[in-house]
Structures are given as C-alpha cells and as structure tokens.
Length: 81
Image (cartoon, rainbow, N blue to C red; front, side, top):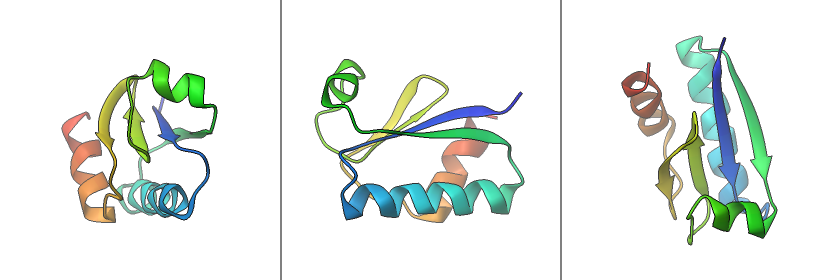
C-alpha cells in the first residue's frame, strides 16, 4: 500500500507548484501514493493548517506556507518510509 498525500490549499498557483513538485518527487523515488488536492477551507483548518499550501503525508502535516522543492519533498518522503 502506498502513501496518502494531501495538498491543502484553495488551488492557487503556489498550491499547484507544490502539487507538481510532489508528483515529480514520487516519480523520481518510484514511490506509490494517492495524492489528493483538498480545497475545502473547513478541511484545511481541521488539519490545523493556517497558511497554504499545506502538505500532509499519511495524516501528518509536514509543511505549511511554503512551496517545497522536489528535493525537499523527496527528503520528507524518505524520512517517513
């Protein structure tokens, strides 16, 4: 079973950039994951994220308020492996 990843944000260019970097990181690592975009503000707040974009990996908020590079995403995914 793969990882469960959520990109939290209203769909702004910053959120799309993070989404794209997550997809690239997963591809480069050969990791299987379900990637979901969460645009509902209630759900975003329920995760405790006050600044978007937010990144949730396997139910844990690992980043908020910044666009992580592909390399940064890869490091996060390796840590949780």
